[in-house]
Length: 459
Image: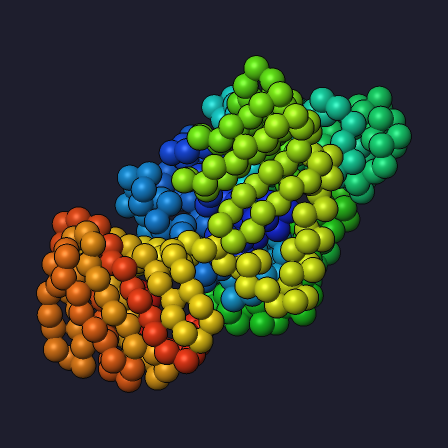
């Protein structure tokens, strides 16, 4: 068996916690507990060997994938990370993984989204193993037994019994409340978005129902070339599952939640005696049924309120009724229309070498950042035309290259880089390196940069 993890989604319904450059699957939602992606990776290892896990993501998340796996303590093969040149929805992403696996051999494959919570991981792994025989003639979707009418999920209508599952009669779109009640009474299941199949059968069904995607990958091992031939975005549900006659559903009760909204978060996270979920340090008085999250060091106090979502980041504040949290996507769409960078960037931004946090800024005057460079990592060799930079080392030792001259700067020392000078910051020590960077100039945007290699140090 092989595993494909889909890790390219952006999680817009969880803004401002989730942003385009750091989406929900990589966020640690509960302190130091693993991220959703890390939990998915560990769940995959209950079923397959390390080198039989394939992650499909995009270029800006590739280093987040590598960092998350490295943090788990695994030496993971970078070639198993398949980078989509652009998002084309789930069917091209899954087929990219299938195409890569089929180069070696045809096998059964389990496909996991990376942003779902599953509380009964081992129990689910056992069900997957027991369902593998179904892949001989079926593409399996795992159906969740509903615990209440929900209008946010698609539904699956089962028909004839088939081993430990059922032949699928029909997929149903997201219903209104009354229809959802009717579906549950008829024994329908929620569509989990988790699939299992044999690569040979799946490829045959893709050829029958999504020939463009099949042909795009035929005769090439270049994912960029293949994606360039795909003219439209298409999901696996629409492209295959709703059309194929070879689809089965295996019902499961595994503590599943797709965490598609803050209300979904509220359902699964630990609550206090008044059913509040409160991040550490915040104060709650005479309040019930609330979700309150703030950045470390930021105090939020609520008094006499019920059923609220409060998410307070340094650069954005969200307040809404819990039953209205699906509308967060409308806020994100509005910000995108205004080209507001807060849909993409946190104040803290993660890079292949570490991260930086903007402490203070004034447009076209100055910007102050706290930069952390991980052990053995380095920034690109670069220059800026419109700004100078003053670096103050606060932790560790910096290896600094300025116009090919190398200097070492210790904690408490500083160095100045003039506009137009080529420069690089590097951590060759055994401890994390942290600096305060003060940028000064009349243009401080990210495009005022010329790189002579990339953020991995590659030419």
